[in-house]
Image (cartoon, rainbow, N blue to C red; front, side, top):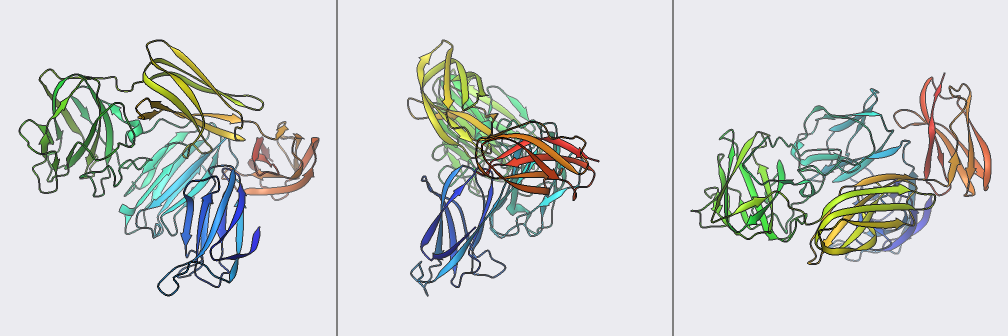
Length: 551
């Protein structure tokens, strides 16, 4: 699709479908351009690029993986400079729009790639292998972010391999979803780093993310062998305090006093040469991720060896030149604290955490104010029914139900009033009246009466398509494969055969009405092996009909 003439300062409205990949480019422009993509329903930019049509070019191209179905506003600006203070132009350029449907699979894994400097990976790659097949290598050729979709089936074995070719590995990181199946970097580990049998259910958040924090209430030894910053950027300019200098290998913890008193602690690396830093936020009424505001206690001092809070220190923050110790906390029962412990030495080695509790203080192992018993989703013919229950609640105001197409980017779809404070089991329900075709991911945002909130685990459910089909036949196939289909959407429909690494090896278009039909796909280009058959609806949604083999 091409919008033939878009002037600098003008925009085009484009309908998009979740999980499709869109490329917007004005490489034929005669003026220096920028492209910004906005969700037309509101909010900030979802993608932006300046000068990506070749090395040294002044024309723009941006590739974006759609996280929602709806409409985007694609703004084409003329670059503003001291030579051209107006970011518009009387001349125009063709805006070329390309759409790539998602690959075949029961669900989609999203590989997100990041470069903190913004100049790409310099040839470093993440390789993905499915079921022992060859590795498909992905890289970030330029810019700060990029993503790729990998189609997988339940029961597949996925293997991740990282190859380092960049002179700046400390700028590189990546994540693999839905949710946070795997993350690594900065300075990712090389070689084969991860393997998993696919179940399409997003895992719980890792302890490298605040939402996956570990509740601690006693002296404890930790391996702390993390190599990454997790899947969410919980430290930022508003809350990092003294930890403002590339804190990388860190994990999150919650603790809560059950009785009032004073709390101190010692964080002792098993190797005295290791330098550990930490920050503590609180007191809070409940865990809030990311933590709000600057930490209450923060130590960034070097060199290695023990650090922590004691009863002789007189300051709350230690900078690089300090003695590594800050003063104790005076606490009250029921308060919640969040702690981040970072291994500045990036050794991944163990440490011991020992509490020093005085004046009657004790720690409670229960932190979250709402005890969520169950959370499930059931797909119906036209809706998805969500059900959950709590064993007890304290000052619980309401639940926000949030939905995602990829397990990473969520948006609210409804709210349910809560019981407030109760020791009784309470059941809740919500109906998603307009679920997405394919995989739908849901989570609950539990909001207290004082505005603090926590997130539930993420669940997934597959919802139907505009098509209903049988399995591909014959199976095994020789010259062609067929599928019986009932369509509820007229228009151009495509039948595709996709190989084990997601390549389309055969495709045929049909003009369909509403009703039953048999579609046939010739297989002359296909070598012997296993394939998936998919039907692409006129609205761009994709239905996986099943697997077949070619003899």
